[in-house]
Length: 366
Image (cartoon, rainbow, N blue to C red):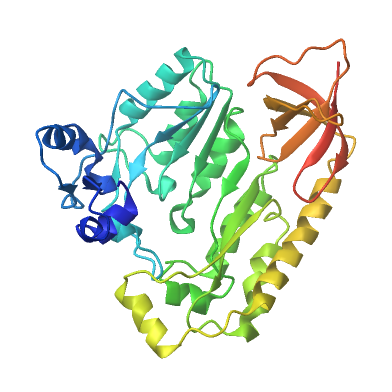
């Protein structure tokens, strides 16, 4: 068993599942070869759980990628934020970044292998700090976008505290950087954000949205909202939905309830504010607001001609292929019989002929 749960549960896993031979936290992945040697030598239970303070990143030349044209590059691991509800800092260790030279070398290697889209990953990807001191996150983002052969670059997930205007500048300046940002808000109430230890206020979050609104490029943030935190007051629902009403947060909202995690602060909140029966109205209000925004936004694309990247072929009589726009919107399109859709990653111009809250319809332009 590998990952956060393995780190959190540790050797208890062997007691509950004696057939498990290895338990390894994500901060110890680079030790996997030695751990496998121990198993082959006859050790029944091998652990890698004591390396959360390491400064090293996990890098390997043997990365398995299943998508033929889109690949992911982890540029930073761990987290130093310690949000009240999150277990990641306790399981993935402190923040540690790869050198920009290493990241760019992997990006060039992927381009040589035929990949056309790269997504940079990190628990807080924009907290990236180059150990060599050569590039900021925005500079690295731009450099990846300038790698020959790479046509689209995305990044996720961003933390609002570390989201600077230089990132918006980079997206505007480099055409291959997709004008799409995942910027979790978690709550529209500064009081709740403070209880979550999110390290920013509602006003600071909206300031970052304003940076994107002020640019010519139509940046599309989507955000994550926690529906239930111990102590969150139902009278604050209007404040919680206020960021979603901002025009630029119009593409998608990810929602979730707080799950019990072993953090001292959340346990304290649970004791002071016992978990009540779930209130479906909270989610309904947020999702209805977001659905209105998405319908209005999607309808504005009607009769526009947009470049899309093919992701697959469809057998539906109403659709010949599926594609993704630069803003991550899914699209199904039809084409004339004389035109043959090439393999995934091919790009076409598509006329938008219909829209739904979560997807678009179109027809290929010859």
